[in-house]
Length: 317
Image 1 (tube, helix red, strand yellow):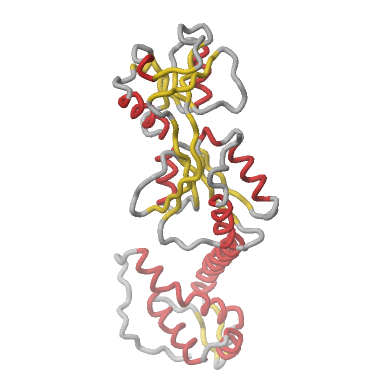
Image 2 (cartoon, one colour):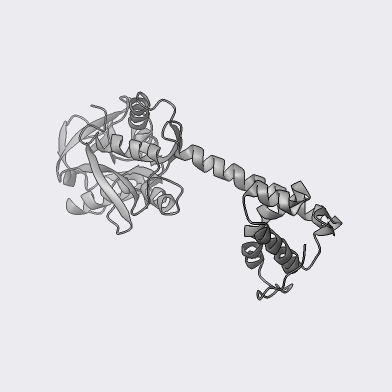
């Protein structure tokens, strides 16, 4: 093999590591093929590339590294000590690339692929398990990577590419997202069982203006809705506690720490009474969101179609 001159400058020791990787990466598979065959012609035939292309690639690789990787013996080659050291790392790198390729191919498989799906804490006890059970009746081998979090955190993960879809509230309105309303959930004013309002069935939210509230933390969609509804009713709620779970808040209401605006519980909880709010209209929209202009894999497309088919029938009766 004859070394050929290249117009491409050699990297200096101070060159960026990323630049070196970009420079070397296209030639690593060629190097491994030549090292495996110890013969350029056989390697070229095995990889279905012209021998001249392979020879130039190896010469340039050695030039860029500044070391001899092969000892030439006529038509055959053998690895130098530097070549053997380099080959061990190259084989590990190529193995990682192949494993990554297999993983993304598997995730996109229509029958056995993966969907990264995020949902609100309040959707986790009953709604999401019911959805997954219904979807898997027709797609039994599709896998799910599930994330349970509050709305803003899920949208951040959606934008970061960590989620394919998320079930959230309020339904987001942002130029980089696509969102579709799926259903609506009534909110109730939850009061302790021995509260002065506990004998009531319905209430105007303004009647609770003097009460202490327990709410979710800022950043949660339900907290924003609570603040908006109270403002619409003419007051700013006095907050005694900010939490992360609706059912925790319901327990604190039962303990007498305050009142709360919450969606209906999965099962009735003792110690509290849940009042219908007649004014203002107390409800939250539930929607599904995904990143605009991102192509869907077949399993993601199937699950998205399934969710959209549940419009108006997303939540348990």
